Length: 270
Image 1 (cartoon, rainbow, N blue to C red):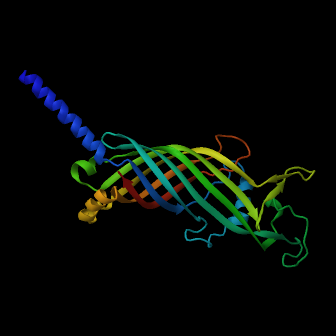
Image 2 (image 1 turned 90 degrees about the horizontal axis):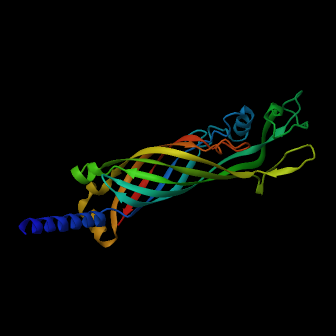
Image 3 (image 1 turned 30 degrees about the vertical axis):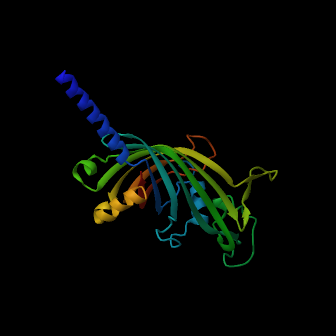
Protein backbone atom coordinates (compact mmCIF):
# COMPACT_ATOMS: atom_id res chain seq x y z
CA UNK A 1 0.00 0.00 0.00
CA UNK A 2 2.83 2.34 0.84
CA UNK A 3 4.48 1.59 -2.52
CA UNK A 4 1.20 2.28 -4.32
CA UNK A 5 0.80 5.61 -2.51
CA UNK A 6 4.38 6.57 -3.35
CA UNK A 7 3.86 5.71 -7.04
CA UNK A 8 0.63 7.69 -7.05
CA UNK A 9 2.34 10.73 -5.56
CA UNK A 10 5.19 10.41 -8.08
CA UNK A 11 2.71 10.16 -10.97
CA UNK A 12 0.82 13.25 -9.75
CA UNK A 13 4.12 15.13 -9.36
CA UNK A 14 5.19 14.25 -12.93
CA UNK A 15 1.83 15.33 -14.31
CA UNK A 16 1.96 18.63 -12.45
CA UNK A 17 5.57 19.23 -13.58
CA UNK A 18 4.64 18.54 -17.20
CA UNK A 19 1.65 20.87 -16.96
CA UNK A 20 3.83 23.58 -15.39
CA UNK A 21 6.44 23.20 -18.12
CA UNK A 22 3.76 23.43 -20.80
CA UNK A 23 2.28 26.48 -19.10
CA UNK A 24 5.65 28.21 -18.81
CA UNK A 25 6.76 27.51 -22.37
CA UNK A 26 5.76 29.97 -25.09
CA UNK A 27 2.79 29.17 -27.28
CA UNK A 28 3.82 31.30 -30.25
CA UNK A 29 6.39 33.78 -31.51
CA UNK A 30 6.25 36.86 -33.71
CA UNK A 31 9.29 38.39 -35.38
CA UNK A 32 10.27 41.17 -37.76
CA UNK A 33 13.28 40.61 -40.00
CA UNK A 34 15.31 42.17 -42.78
CA UNK A 35 18.26 41.30 -44.96
CA UNK A 36 19.83 41.85 -48.40
CA UNK A 37 18.55 39.72 -51.26
CA UNK A 38 19.29 39.21 -54.94
CA UNK A 39 17.60 36.46 -56.99
CA UNK A 40 19.55 34.17 -59.28
CA UNK A 41 16.99 34.86 -62.09
CA UNK A 42 18.14 31.84 -64.13
CA UNK A 43 20.48 28.92 -63.57
CA UNK A 44 20.59 27.99 -67.26
CA UNK A 45 20.12 31.18 -69.29
CA UNK A 46 22.87 33.79 -69.24
CA UNK A 47 20.62 36.01 -71.41
CA UNK A 48 18.07 36.29 -68.60
CA UNK A 49 20.78 37.13 -66.10
CA UNK A 50 22.23 39.76 -68.46
CA UNK A 51 18.76 41.22 -68.92
CA UNK A 52 18.32 41.58 -65.16
CA UNK A 53 21.78 43.13 -64.74
CA UNK A 54 21.15 45.56 -67.59
CA UNK A 55 17.98 46.97 -66.04
CA UNK A 56 18.55 46.46 -62.30
CA UNK A 57 22.25 45.82 -61.75
CA UNK A 58 23.31 49.21 -60.39
CA UNK A 59 25.57 48.21 -57.51
CA UNK A 60 25.63 51.74 -56.08
CA UNK A 61 21.90 52.06 -55.60
CA UNK A 62 21.48 50.22 -52.28
CA UNK A 63 23.10 49.79 -48.89
CA UNK A 64 24.35 46.31 -49.80
CA UNK A 65 25.43 47.07 -53.36
CA UNK A 66 23.14 45.40 -55.87
CA UNK A 67 21.15 43.60 -53.14
CA UNK A 68 18.12 45.59 -51.96
CA UNK A 69 16.72 44.86 -48.50
CA UNK A 70 13.96 42.32 -48.06
CA UNK A 71 11.77 42.96 -45.00
CA UNK A 72 8.98 40.88 -43.57
CA UNK A 73 7.19 39.32 -40.63
CA UNK A 74 6.98 35.75 -39.37
CA UNK A 75 4.80 33.87 -36.89
CA UNK A 76 5.52 30.49 -35.31
CA UNK A 77 3.07 28.31 -33.38
CA UNK A 78 4.78 25.81 -31.08
CA UNK A 79 3.31 22.31 -31.04
CA UNK A 80 5.93 20.26 -29.16
CA UNK A 81 8.31 20.85 -26.26
CA UNK A 82 11.04 18.26 -25.60
CA UNK A 83 14.60 19.55 -25.11
CA UNK A 84 13.45 22.40 -27.29
CA UNK A 85 10.49 23.80 -29.17
CA UNK A 86 9.10 22.49 -32.45
CA UNK A 87 6.82 24.88 -34.28
CA UNK A 88 4.96 25.54 -37.51
CA UNK A 89 5.86 28.90 -39.02
CA UNK A 90 4.46 31.18 -41.72
CA UNK A 91 6.29 34.12 -43.27
CA UNK A 92 5.46 36.94 -45.66
CA UNK A 93 7.95 39.51 -46.96
CA UNK A 94 8.35 42.31 -49.47
CA UNK A 95 11.23 43.09 -51.83
CA UNK A 96 11.65 45.27 -54.89
CA UNK A 97 14.43 46.47 -57.14
CA UNK A 98 14.28 49.52 -59.40
CA UNK A 99 16.03 50.59 -62.57
CA UNK A 100 15.42 52.50 -65.79
CA UNK A 101 14.37 51.66 -69.31
CA UNK A 102 17.03 51.57 -72.05
CA UNK A 103 17.25 54.01 -74.95
CA UNK A 104 18.46 52.27 -78.10
CA UNK A 105 21.01 54.31 -80.08
CA UNK A 106 22.63 53.91 -83.47
CA UNK A 107 25.66 51.59 -83.41
CA UNK A 108 27.54 54.08 -85.65
CA UNK A 109 27.13 56.96 -83.20
CA UNK A 110 26.52 55.79 -79.68
CA UNK A 111 26.17 59.38 -78.41
CA UNK A 112 23.70 60.43 -81.08
CA UNK A 113 19.92 60.47 -80.79
CA UNK A 114 19.40 58.21 -83.81
CA UNK A 115 17.29 55.32 -82.60
CA UNK A 116 17.32 51.84 -84.12
CA UNK A 117 14.86 48.99 -83.86
CA UNK A 118 16.56 47.12 -81.05
CA UNK A 119 14.55 44.68 -78.97
CA UNK A 120 14.46 45.66 -75.28
CA UNK A 121 13.69 42.01 -74.43
CA UNK A 122 16.93 40.77 -76.03
CA UNK A 123 20.09 41.85 -74.17
CA UNK A 124 22.27 40.94 -77.15
CA UNK A 125 20.67 43.80 -79.15
CA UNK A 126 21.24 46.38 -76.42
CA UNK A 127 25.00 46.84 -76.66
CA UNK A 128 24.66 50.48 -77.67
CA UNK A 129 22.13 51.84 -75.21
CA UNK A 130 21.89 54.34 -72.44
CA UNK A 131 19.61 54.59 -69.42
CA UNK A 132 16.26 56.17 -70.20
CA UNK A 133 13.94 58.14 -67.95
CA UNK A 134 11.11 55.61 -67.47
CA UNK A 135 11.35 53.76 -64.16
CA UNK A 136 11.20 49.97 -64.15
CA UNK A 137 10.48 47.90 -61.07
CA UNK A 138 10.54 44.21 -60.17
CA UNK A 139 8.32 43.54 -57.14
CA UNK A 140 8.52 40.26 -55.19
CA UNK A 141 6.34 38.96 -52.33
CA UNK A 142 7.84 35.80 -50.82
CA UNK A 143 5.53 33.42 -48.93
CA UNK A 144 6.87 30.62 -46.73
CA UNK A 145 5.38 27.78 -44.68
CA UNK A 146 7.55 25.38 -42.72
CA UNK A 147 8.88 23.92 -39.48
CA UNK A 148 11.22 25.44 -36.88
CA UNK A 149 13.11 23.63 -34.13
CA UNK A 150 14.61 25.74 -31.31
CA UNK A 151 17.15 24.09 -29.02
CA UNK A 152 16.15 25.75 -25.73
CA UNK A 153 17.65 23.14 -23.37
CA UNK A 154 20.82 25.13 -22.61
CA UNK A 155 18.75 28.18 -21.74
CA UNK A 156 16.12 26.46 -19.61
CA UNK A 157 18.60 24.13 -17.88
CA UNK A 158 21.68 26.32 -17.42
CA UNK A 159 20.47 29.86 -18.09
CA UNK A 160 22.65 30.31 -21.19
CA UNK A 161 20.80 33.00 -23.23
CA UNK A 162 21.80 31.56 -26.64
CA UNK A 163 19.30 29.43 -28.57
CA UNK A 164 20.32 27.86 -31.91
CA UNK A 165 17.55 26.82 -34.26
CA UNK A 166 16.92 25.05 -37.55
CA UNK A 167 14.17 25.60 -40.09
CA UNK A 168 12.92 24.17 -43.38
CA UNK A 169 9.82 24.44 -45.51
CA UNK A 170 8.16 25.37 -48.77
CA UNK A 171 8.19 28.71 -50.58
CA UNK A 172 6.16 30.51 -53.20
CA UNK A 173 7.48 33.82 -54.54
CA UNK A 174 4.91 36.05 -56.24
CA UNK A 175 6.50 38.58 -58.61
CA UNK A 176 5.50 41.21 -61.15
CA UNK A 177 7.30 43.80 -63.25
CA UNK A 178 6.14 47.32 -64.04
CA UNK A 179 7.23 50.08 -66.41
CA UNK A 180 6.33 53.54 -65.22
CA UNK A 181 3.08 53.01 -63.35
CA UNK A 182 1.81 50.26 -65.68
CA UNK A 183 2.19 46.49 -65.56
CA UNK A 184 4.94 45.39 -67.93
CA UNK A 185 4.21 43.20 -70.96
CA UNK A 186 6.50 41.49 -73.44
CA UNK A 187 5.95 40.00 -76.94
CA UNK A 188 6.10 36.22 -77.16
CA UNK A 189 5.90 35.65 -80.94
CA UNK A 190 6.01 37.39 -84.32
CA UNK A 191 2.28 38.14 -84.18
CA UNK A 192 3.05 40.53 -81.29
CA UNK A 193 1.08 38.46 -78.83
CA UNK A 194 1.94 39.82 -75.40
CA UNK A 195 2.42 38.17 -72.04
CA UNK A 196 2.07 39.96 -68.72
CA UNK A 197 5.30 40.38 -66.79
CA UNK A 198 4.08 38.58 -63.68
CA UNK A 199 3.98 35.13 -62.20
CA UNK A 200 5.04 32.95 -59.30
CA UNK A 201 7.82 30.51 -58.52
CA UNK A 202 7.67 27.64 -56.04
CA UNK A 203 10.48 25.98 -54.12
CA UNK A 204 11.83 25.24 -50.66
CA UNK A 205 14.27 26.59 -48.08
CA UNK A 206 16.61 25.33 -45.35
CA UNK A 207 18.08 27.57 -42.71
CA UNK A 208 19.83 27.90 -39.38
CA UNK A 209 20.18 30.70 -36.88
CA UNK A 210 21.14 31.91 -33.42
CA UNK A 211 18.90 33.93 -31.14
CA UNK A 212 19.98 35.89 -28.07
CA UNK A 213 17.45 35.96 -25.22
CA UNK A 214 17.33 39.53 -23.88
CA UNK A 215 15.55 38.74 -20.60
CA UNK A 216 18.88 38.55 -18.74
CA UNK A 217 19.44 42.26 -19.36
CA UNK A 218 16.57 43.16 -17.03
CA UNK A 219 15.08 40.07 -15.33
CA UNK A 220 12.68 42.10 -13.18
CA UNK A 221 11.05 43.82 -16.17
CA UNK A 222 10.97 40.49 -18.03
CA UNK A 223 9.12 38.85 -15.11
CA UNK A 224 6.65 41.74 -14.96
CA UNK A 225 5.98 41.49 -18.70
CA UNK A 226 5.39 37.76 -18.34
CA UNK A 227 2.68 38.34 -15.74
CA UNK A 228 1.00 41.47 -17.12
CA UNK A 229 1.37 41.06 -20.91
CA UNK A 230 1.99 37.36 -21.47
CA UNK A 231 5.39 38.08 -23.01
CA UNK A 232 7.63 35.09 -22.38
CA UNK A 233 10.80 36.60 -23.83
CA UNK A 234 12.37 38.89 -26.40
CA UNK A 235 15.25 38.03 -28.72
CA UNK A 236 17.70 39.34 -31.24
CA UNK A 237 18.50 36.83 -33.98
CA UNK A 238 20.75 36.20 -36.96
CA UNK A 239 20.05 33.51 -39.53
CA UNK A 240 21.11 32.18 -42.90
CA UNK A 241 18.72 30.62 -45.39
CA UNK A 242 19.42 28.66 -48.54
CA UNK A 243 16.52 29.45 -50.88
CA UNK A 244 15.96 26.90 -53.65
CA UNK A 245 13.09 28.60 -55.44
CA UNK A 246 13.34 27.58 -59.09
CA UNK A 247 9.87 26.17 -59.75
CA UNK A 248 10.80 22.53 -59.11
CA UNK A 249 12.34 22.34 -62.62
CA UNK A 250 9.26 23.80 -64.30
CA UNK A 251 10.19 25.67 -67.51
CA UNK A 252 9.83 29.43 -68.01
CA UNK A 253 10.09 30.30 -64.33
CA UNK A 254 12.15 33.08 -62.82
CA UNK A 255 14.71 31.51 -60.52
CA UNK A 256 14.32 33.31 -57.18
CA UNK A 257 16.99 31.20 -55.45
CA UNK A 258 19.62 32.85 -53.25
CA UNK A 259 21.68 32.51 -50.09
CA UNK A 260 20.14 35.04 -47.75
CA UNK A 261 21.33 36.47 -44.43
CA UNK A 262 18.73 38.11 -42.20
CA UNK A 263 18.54 39.69 -38.75
CA UNK A 264 15.69 40.85 -36.60
CA UNK A 265 13.86 40.94 -33.31
CA UNK A 266 11.45 38.30 -32.00
CA UNK A 267 8.97 38.11 -29.12
CA UNK A 268 7.63 34.93 -27.45
CA UNK A 269 4.08 34.92 -26.11
CA UNK A 270 2.47 32.60 -23.57
